[in-house]
Amino acid sequence: MSITELLKTSYTAFHAVENAEKLLKESGFVKIPRGENFRLEKGGKYYLVERESALVAFTVGDTEGGNFYYKFVCSHADSPCFKIKHSAENLSGKYSRLEVESYGGGIWYSWFDRKLRLAGRLTVKSGKKVFARLCASEENFVIPSLAVHLNREVNKNFAVNVQSDTQPLFALASKVGGLETLMKKFLAEGEELVDYDLFLVSADEPFVSGANGEFLTAARADDLVCAFSSVEAICGVKPDKGINVCAVFDSEEIGSETNQGAGSNLLKRTAERIAFALGKGKEDFYAALERSFAVSADNAHAAHPNKAELAPLNKIYLGDGVIVKHHANRNYTTDGFTSGVFKTLLDNNGIRYADFHMRSDMPCGGTLGKISLGEISVDTVDIGVAQLAMHSAAETFALADYDEMKKALSAFYGCRMESTDGQIELK
Image 1 (cartoon, rainbow, N blue to C red):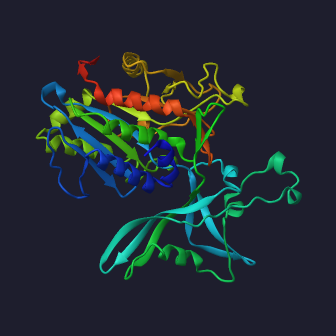
Image 2: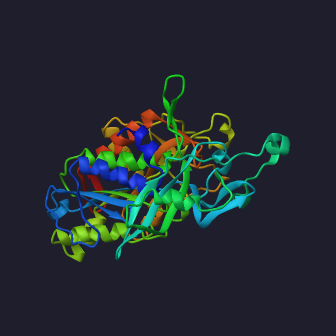
Image 3: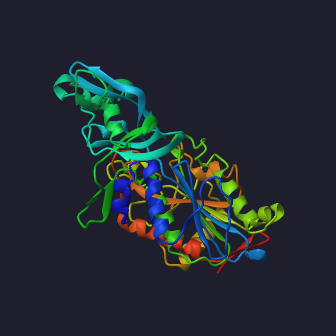
């Protein structure tokens, strides 16, 4: 699948992980079912899924002696959107609406008057079994704007109230019950819907833009551009030395403090289980971490063509390649050493890159790299792809930058990164 198709169909973190699974299976990765022991072989390729919305894939190379180390790439699959509440359907005159609450911090005005869809995970009961099933409605919905004639100040001071302004128009109806009917379309005979994690998501198809077709505008570019480039990269590299790990987390947009988020022990637990399955002890594991390197991959803010004054003096642009992200207070994990190591790797492989800093008078958001380091401490660099309109319902990035990111992560997974007493040699 192309990045256009991946972005189009990855409505939620659940669907993004499902698409990542397809890529991994096509490349020969073997799924380790939840709750089963790890049984690993040299040269093997494996993955596991955490509650349908997070994924860790890894390959096993030579792990003898100093070759036992990890190369981690961490990204996230969730994006700002609206979550459907329980008992959500309500009437407004002859209209049926759905009550929603915000998931993450989106640019909510960008959601009005565009094609939306219901998607997520249903919890289904069949007999004594309870299990999950993904869903995405064929039906489209809309959050209609208020006409300018009814709000003459809309272009001056309109602020979105999520409670009162963003309920999508669901149907013409005299009574509620349509949402339950819609969700039952995804059930088989004898199955019962017992709960759901249902979201209102953008259903607009990605489109190429720019005079030379150089841009792609799509929902959920943050952070699926990095997530899918990391999955494609690990799929394309043959296991050699050490352990390559691709972690795609959920919940980054709401703080990462969930079982599927970077703030959980998912990454450390998986890395430790890999070590134990290969016959390594706890001391071997911690020594391996000291020889390891991690990449936190999450997109960066490009200088805006109409608001260039909001960018710092060292502006980055769409088309600049891989962006290396820095922050004095370490909201990004990058330091001079990890940046230098990764830039050397990029230089060795002819990959374009640029350095990013936030304006000094503006707050800087954090990334999952900083959060995951609380559980598993290794040398880490924060990188991303430059984009415009982050957290909008339609974000824009340069297609060439996606290719550069894939090259960079493929080079990272493919290199021999040997660490001796704090010195890293790239081979």
